[in-house]
Amino acid sequence: MSLFESRPVGPDTAARNYPELLRRYVLLLDLVRDLSSALHLSDLLERVALAATRLLECEGAAVLLLEPLSGDLHVEATTHPGLAVLRIREVPPDRSLAGMAIASGEPLVMGAEGITRAVESGPVPYELALLAPNVPSAFIGVPLEGKVQKIGVLEVFSRESQGFTPEDVAALQALAGQAAVAIESMRLFEQSDLITELVHEIRTPLTALETAAALLERSDLRETQRNSVLGTLRHEIQRLVELTDEYLDLARLESGRNRYQPERFQLGPLLSECAEIVTPLMHAQELRFVRQFEAEPLELFADRARIKQVVLNLLSNAVKYNQPNGLVLLRARRVSALSEGEAAQACIEVTDSGLGIAEDSMGHIFERFFRGQVGESRAPGSGLGLYIARHIVESHRGRIDVTSKLGEGTTFTICLPVAPLAGVRPAGAQRSILER
Ligand code: ADP
Image 1 (tube, rainbow, N blue to C red):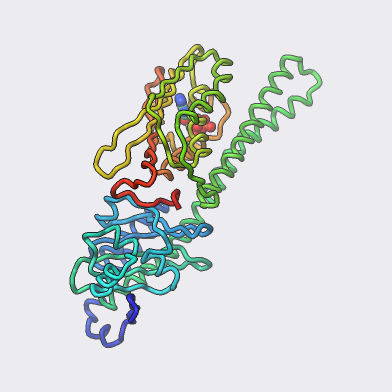
Image 2 (cartoon, rainbow, N blue to C red):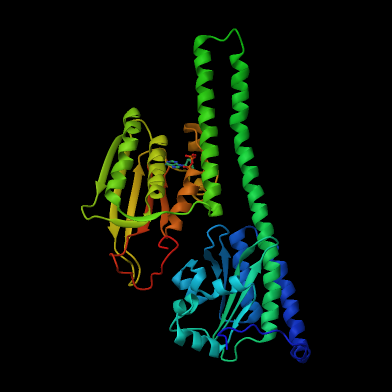
């Protein structure tokens, strides 16, 4: 007998539970209506997880999305207390319940017996291993199917001994069907949103280029005026190049087409390389550049080129938005783990004595295409650098933070988990997409 059984909903059971069924479908309608008021994808996925939990009155739910090209599964939203605490995102498709549901294209339904057997016979499916020793007593995983491709899986967990009924499976399938439609349209909406934003951003430099070209045609233009117009041309062209390069980088990162290439490396030499690259810029602006790295080596397991990209972005911002004769400070230190089982962190700080960031801009600084007043007036840029930096840092299970005081300066801090000692995995830490 197979470990996992798909149970069809029999007409007899449905007739017996008619009032309950009706109540369930009224609730389902309410929950589906609520999905349509989501403002963005992560909000929508949170609502789907919550809807599944309420619909089945169960311990918790999780929404996992499939990256189309890599085939990786990511937990994007969960109401399950165990999964939320672990903050695990990557789920291996080849040894998880979600992966099995995706592969079969059918709901995967497990009761207490099936779960016990799966745990005892091994290899233990990933979700059950994560939740051990509090393994659920019932599970359903329903594939989320889009019109053209598989989107992911909606999972629910219960600790009730009676487990899930066939009506539960049917109700969850109905919710999953609606959720899949909502996710697909939200993705299309967000894509066209990004393109609209890009076109909007491109219009400003294009208008400036058009005006500059018209000015250059005038025969009465003095030499100094011509040079100034040429300066504007170069500035706007640089802005267009930055915009398109960073937009393409962002599109690749967000679609999952650019996979991270993790390796073990020492942070010190990477920071020195970054420092070497920006030193000429510092000299050109007569900035003082101070480096403070702890003597203790800090080893990371990460995509070296991407981490370098983030550090260079912060350093070049510290130069761009600085004051004449200002200071840039690059620091790196180790921060011990806050609790047992967590990895120690390598924290990199980039501080400048520049113009600072206005308080009302602080909440928007990591948003795409955001350019503060300082940005607009100071230097060409795309407003995508910090957005991409946050994407990269968070994909490495890190954090990026900012503190700033207008007129005094700004500090950006990135904290990334240090690599575990070779052959040792910190308790509770899971293999991430980076390690596979
Ligand atoms: P860009 O520099 O291309 O505009 P970023 O995403 O790197 O894009 O930065 C977004 C905005 O944040 C900038 O336009 C600027 O207003 C502000 N900013 C970033 N770094 C600093 C800094 N070190 N000091 C002051 N403002 C900053």
